[in-house]
Image (cartoon, rainbow, N blue to C red):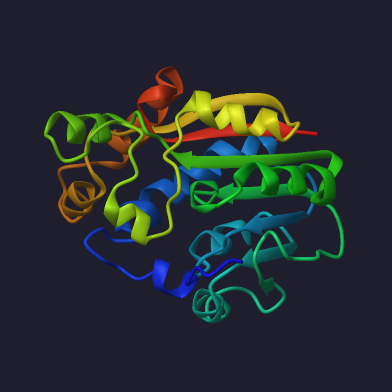
Amino acid sequence: MNNRNYNAEKIDNSRKYFYGFDYEVMHHYFIKSFLPFFKGEDVLELGSFEGGFTKRLEAYFSDITCVEASDEAVNEAKKIVRDDVKIINSLFEDVVLPKKYNNIVMTHVLEHLDNPVSVLRRIREEWLTDEGVFLLVCPNANAPSRQIAVKMGLIPYNAAVTEAEKKHGHRITYSLDTLERDAKAAGFHIIHRSGIFFKALANFQWDKLLQTDIVSKEYLDGCYELGQIYPDLCSSIFLVCKK
C-alpha cells in the first residue's frame, strides 16, 4: 500500500524543494539539451510539479499531457499552463493513458520513485511509440557541489540520501552508472548520455549569485558547454532512450 503524502513532500523544509537556480538556469538548459531529440507534436511529461517546466514545453508541442501525484501541485500548474494542456492527477503506477507518445520527459523525478525500474518498464512498454524518445534527467550524485559537501562533512558520501531529501521523497541519488543500470534493466536502448551544467556551487549559493551581476549569461553558457566535456561533474545527468 502506498501511504506517501505527495503534497507534504513538495513543501520546503530545511532543504528547499525548488530554487531559483532550478527555474532560471537548469530548466533553460534542460530544454537546450532536449531540443536535438524532440520529434513530432506530442509530449508526455511525467512529474510536472507546479507547471514551471511544462510552460517551457508549450513552445515546442501542441499536444501536452502531464501526470503528477500531488493534487496541490496540479492545481497550481493549471493556473499557469495553456488551457489545452492535459494534467492527470495520478501515480505513475496507477495511471491509464489514452495513447502512446513520441516524446516522454522525466526531469528530477525518477529519484522519488519507490520502484523506478517498474515505472521505467511501463514507460517503454505502454507509453512510448516505437520511434519515440524518452528523455530522462536526474540530479547527479557526483556533482562537484555535492562532493564538496562530502569533504565538508555535510553529507556522508556522494550518493547518500540526506534526511532533508528523504522528506522531499527522494529514494536514491543517481550517478551515470546507476541511472544507466536502471534504464537498461527496464529494457531501454540508450542512444545518448551526457551531463547538464557543470556545477561547483550548491543551489542556495547559486540563488545568491543570480541576484548579482557577478555571473553573466556567457558564464552560464560556459558551464553548460563544459558539462558536455565532463558529464560526471554536472548538476544533472541525462539519458536519451529508445525502445
